Image (tube, rainbow, N blue to C red; front, side, top):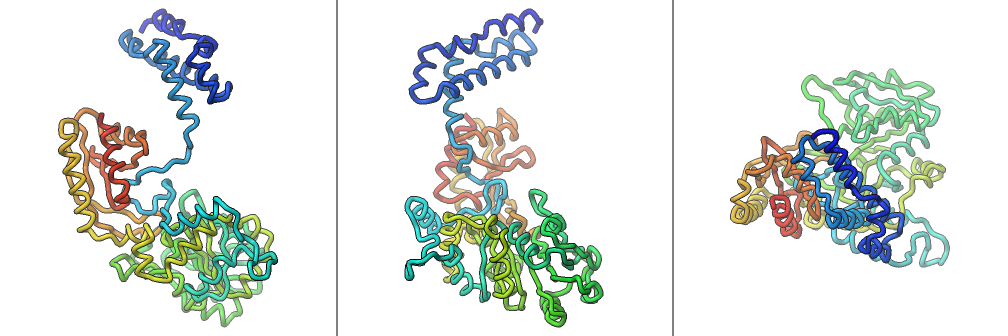
Amino acid sequence: MEPEDRQRYLRALPAVDELFRHPQSQAHLKIYSKALVVASIRRVLERKRQAILRSASEQGAGAVEMAQEHLLAAVEEELAAATRPSLRPVINATGVVLHTNLGRAPLCAEALRNIGDIASRYSNLELDLITGERGSRYEHVEEILRQISGAESVLVVNNNAGAVLLALNSLAEGKEVIVSRGQLVEIGGSFRIPDVMRKSGARLVEVGTTNRTHLKDYEQAINQETALLLKVHTSNFRILGFTAEVSLKELVALGQAKGLPIMEDLGSGCFVDLAEYGIEKEPTVQEAIEAGVDVVTFSGDKLLGGPQAGIILGKKKYLDILKKNPLNRALRIDKLTLAGMESTIRVYLNKAEAIKSLPVLRMLTCRLKELERRAKRLQRRLAKELSSVCQVKLKEETSQVGGGALPLQILPTRVIALRPLEISAADLEKKLRHTDPPVIARVKEEEVLLDLRTVAETEERLLLEGVRQALK
């Protein structure tokens, strides 16, 4: 496009005030503030201005719709988008069960009901109903967690990073903490054990090598400045081959002999032995407590299947110190997290019920035959409706656990593979993200893959509609 042509199109754009005075814009003032209406008009005009500047030909500029009614319609869409919640439900068709970007664990029905009840009314958050005196918010989850885990004492904070920070600060500030080099993990969001330790005021002492650490390495590092022996479960990676690691039982025995507490960060804690269901062995919370660990920390929103929280279990004499730390108040959880956590934990009183009721465990243990049945049903419907614009096939694939848990676990699955005929797979993936609700999928070899492992049956109708919208 010639510069003079571009300028002609730019001059044709109406002024902000002109669009604002239009009756359609004035009608918006009955619902929206003046500032929001004006800001929406500015954004629409700026997008049109940029579209004109990007146009490389007269035909390209002509494709930029200039009619006032279209600009006003765009303002209306902008206002609707501006008032729509930013945090929205999406359909997770990626097959990644604990997808950190998508909020990790979906909550069970019991937790949702309890959160709704507590959120909509007053509650006995810190009131002892028997005595009428002030109580502790942690009492609502302490007894049930002790019962399930076998621990003497319980504390729940806002997340596992907070749990590790609080424990290290309370038990080892200004002192040394010994950790194997092979356990100095980094998880998503740049959470690194050495960084958290530094912020806690504890001094890191690394022992062993990346792939091999022996009991003598710990023994030789212990001195009068040692406050704690820390074991970190490498839940998001594995070191294979020529390796050696000190067992938890050996570490506990060493700690008892030296009069030092043992702390284990399980990362993604689990109350159920998943090996019974064909899933890779993951250490359970109960096993850590039975081994004699003094303090155990883990996440509430990963394999546990609850809301975001950091759960700390262990010996009463150590957790009493944590509870008195001023940091505890800064890290404490609110009533909604407590409501969701209590309901989630109660499900574990019946292991079979937990596998059925908790979405995370249900997805992880779902049989391939069931996934294939559902995928075939949806594939037939999509192929029948969309064959003119998209190839729809059923393929063998694998799902992932995600959330920094079980990195070597392979979950066989069946996916619906969409190969659009008129647009690229990347464009289709983008269009799916802009449906209502958004559909999040993955792209592989010029196909968009929909994995029903992470799609609830109640979401199948919405998934179908989303694919239809994207391929219109």
